[in-house]
Length: 408
Image 1: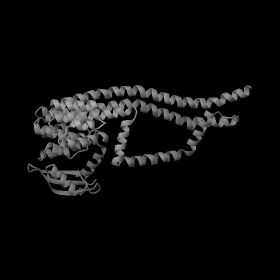
Image 2: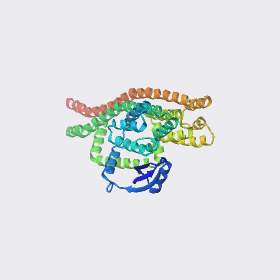
Image 3: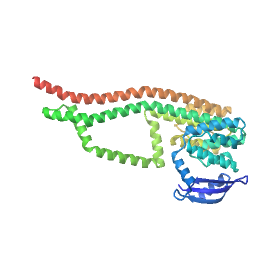
Image 4: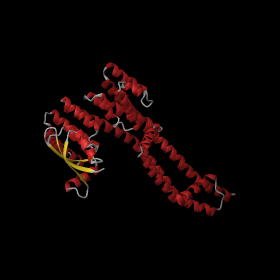
């Protein structure tokens, strides 16, 4: 996507200089107008002819911004704003504490834009890789309601809960993956180094090999002879699969498949529900209306199956329907969720019910992860025990039969 450097006027009469990606100049102008800017100069930049600072910025962008860095920055900014430090000064102080060069560059640009007349949320909008729609919409609501410090604090807490939940999932899957990798590596080493030596010895014995030994030797020979065919098929399969996943139908199919996986599927589903309920509760609690909240949530759930359900619900809610009624039409959201949302709507406390739902399913994820770690480990050990046991029996049987022939 092309990168454009632009100059624009703000509502307050100030000027803003920045860079932004867009498909064309027309799209860039449209986006700037939506942000409240009036562009006066637009130039397309390339990495070859861009100034040194722009090339450095391009390089920084590739390095990425970690969610933990944004979380730490938000905590610091919330503390400063709650201490009644002006926003411009708060950004300058927080900027000095940022270690990540990519985020440092972005926040520096945000501070520059704010100083030259841009609103805080408009300045954040120009950096979607670092600040999500959820972040920008909540900041906008906080500024409008005069509670920016409180909103930033809640944003930081929200990011922390999301990060801890993600870390729990990674930690739960880490041990089984390491175990499976080591087991597969052991089998490959046996097939490449050990079994061929036994095969030569069995040929010297001149005895008829048992069926398990024939299967093992045939598998090993095929692996050594046609490994390149298997590798080529694997590479073509991976490339084709990745190309398919670029299509919208492929993305939806893969997200649906993940929900149907044994053991892991229910965790992925619960994780999506936690994101939906927690994000909705956070947005509504901070003054964002239902329809804008749904627009943000559908892009933050992380699973297109649930995102499509929310997108359809958004259309119907705009026509006068209720969120609980539209969610209940889908089999993807549990009845417990739709009933609790309905109770919240009827009682006038949807935020409270959504918060309770997110807490409940947060605990469910932790319980599911505990069950996953206690079940996958033994299953992997059992599976690899069966495979290695088969290899051992297949290698020992011919030796045992040879001994019997010699003693007879």
